[in-house]
Amino acid sequence: MHNCTHTFLIRRGSCQQVVVICGRNTRLSESLLSRTWPFQMHVKGFVNNMSEYMAACDCVVSKAGPGTIAEAMICGVPVLLNGCIPCQEEGNIPFVINNRVGGYSEQPKIIASIISSWLAPENASELQLMSDRAMALGRPEATFHIVRDLAGMVNA
Image (cartoon, rainbow, N blue to C red; front, side, top):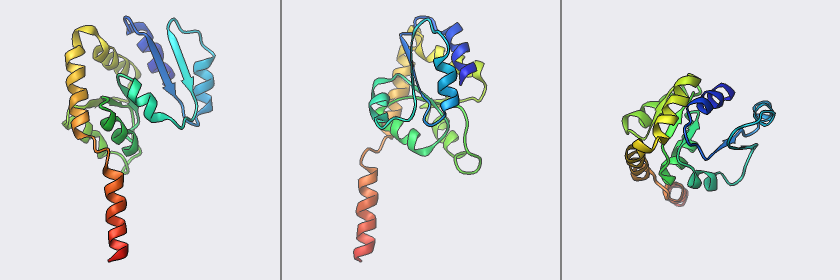
């Protein structure tokens, strides 16, 4: 992530701010906080209000976790996947790519290039199309349907 952020800095153009949610990765958090950035850099550890960050962002860079992808789709946020847990999350990568709601790379320079391209003013319409496709895939009521179905199974 540190290399990706540095490369993005070089290619960023007119970036307003970057928010990095490090979760419990204190090493990454400390590394990013130790640097001086020429734009607003917000580094957070574990947060309980991820949905608010998702709602406020233009795109997400994350591993291919199903919860993050689902939340991004509900919020209509394009996702750039940068890794996965083998066997467990690999199937999520083609879902994102085939539905044209994001991309995949593990290479920091490529990640920075993709994000810079997505956020470039001349690509605003394509970013909006990705966002629209993501929103169409989102299933905000899915959790409630699962609970209802499970309750129905228990009561049957």
